[in-house]
Length: 301
Image 1 (cartoon, rainbow, N blue to C red):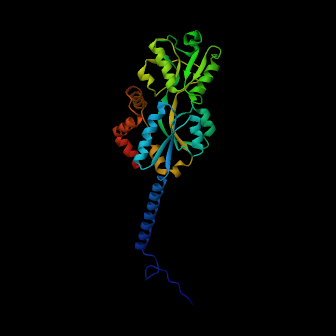
Image 2 (image 1 turned 30 degrees about the vertical axis):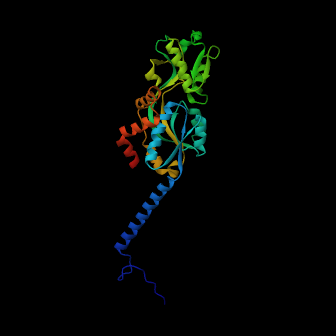
Image 3 (image 1 turned 135 degrees about the vertical axis):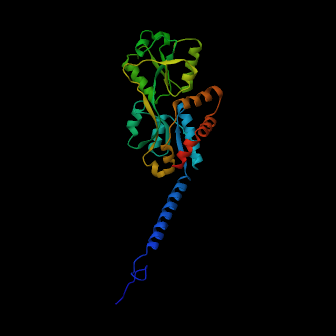
C-alpha cells in the first residue's frame, strides 16, 4: 500500500499557520507586483486628448495633459472638429475629451455615441449659453430682434458647423421664424469674436453665440438675449471617454475621475491667453502649482 503524506506539520500533516501567512503574503506581493506592472505597461502607450479650436477646451485639456505627464504618461493632443472627436473616442483613437456640454447642447452627438462612451468626471455645472449682444443694444430677447433685423444686417455670427450651439441656433432660427430675415453665419471662434469686437468699437448692434466660460464676458459688457422657447438650456460640462478606458488606462482614468475646475479660473486663463499672450501651457502649469494639494490628491488615488 502506498501512503501519501501531506507536506506541513510533522505531527498532524496539516499546513502550519506560518505557512499560510507566508502563502498569503506571497500572493499579495505578487498581486501588487502585477498591478504595478500593468500600471507601468499602460504608460508605454500614448494617451490622446481630442481638442476643438474653442478656448474653453484648450485650457482644461492642457491642465489634464500636464497632470497625466506628471503621472508618467506620454500624452498628445489632436486638434479635431467635435464630431470627429466623438467618432475618434468610439474607435478608441481619442482617449479623452475635456469639454462635452450635456445633456442639452450636444444631445445629438451624445445620442449617437452614448452606447460606446462614458462620462468620466464633471468639470463644472450649470453654465449658460445662447445668443449674446452688447449691453447697449436695446433688444432684450430673441422675440425683440424680429422687429428690426436690418440693424443687425440680418446676421447671427457663430462658430464652426457641427458644434452643438450651432445646431441649437439653427433650431432657434426656425422656431422663431427668423429664416427669412436672418442668416446664421458659421465661422471660426476667432472670426466670430472679431465681428463682435469690430461692432463694439463702432457701437453698432451685433449678435453672436456665446457661452461661459469665455473671455468675451471679461473683455466686453454683454448680455444674453432672453429665449422664451428654451432651446438653450443650462448644461453641465463633462470629461468623456470610451467604455473600457478604466481597464486600458486605469491610473489615468482614476486621476481624471477626480477632475473639476471653476468657470472663473478658466476665464482667467482665457483672458491671459487673449490679452496678455500667455500660452495655455504656462497658465496650466501655474494652475497646477496653485492647486498643488488638489493635484497631489488626484495623483495619489
